[in-house]
Amino acid sequence: CTRVSVSRRIVLVATCTPHSRNPGPGPGLQQPGAHVSKPPEILSSPEFRAMHAKRLEQFGPGTPELSMFVQGEQFHAAGHRSLCGVRDPEGGGVELHLAPGVVCYAFASELYLKALHQIALGRAPRGHKLNVLFGNLPVASQQLVLGFYRAQNGADQKTLASDLLNFSSAFEDWRYVYERPNNELRLGRLIQLTIALYRSVRHQRQSWPMVERPPYVTI
Image (cartoon, rainbow, N blue to C red; front, side):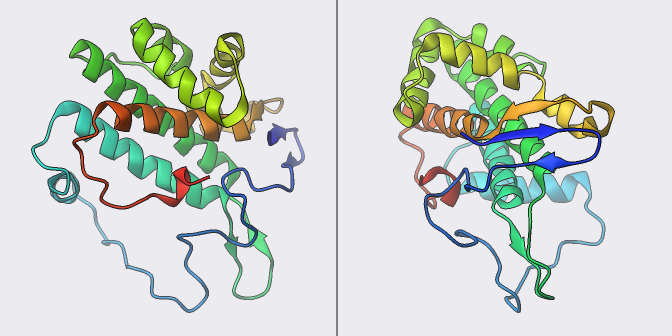
């Protein structure tokens, strides 16, 4: 697994790519000179809600868990793009956005967990702690997540619990990583957890059409 550690002076990351077995910049990245959609100069809440509703229409009638899932999917994609690197067209190498990538993966995991709560219990709790959100799921939901997690790395229940504790505050800690010089995170495992949670939601909502196969879950 890839391990990311932060000291006061440097960020270290293993040379392997955590999200793909294929070399190169990976799927979904814009190459130099490729067309890039221009974002709006001012993004209003109603405008974003309209964009979000359009995305939901691809799945059919909207539900709370669908809204959580689609929002999680967007952060999942953002995390993937942050960590798979963008080649500098001026020849400066490949740049990784590590802290934003960690934050996006952690928040995607949170939203997928809340979607699982909504599916199983009809309501979603508040809060960011991944281990707490997971611990409050019904046992059947926990076992589903464990199965998809184990399929990627052979982890048992004890290992999953330990990893969840390690990731518990990643959304908060890595937004302010400059204040926490000794943070350490098993990045490959966080990515695998997010994928396991994504698959757990999709498994329980198989009636949702697969609009596209996201590159961040095809590993």
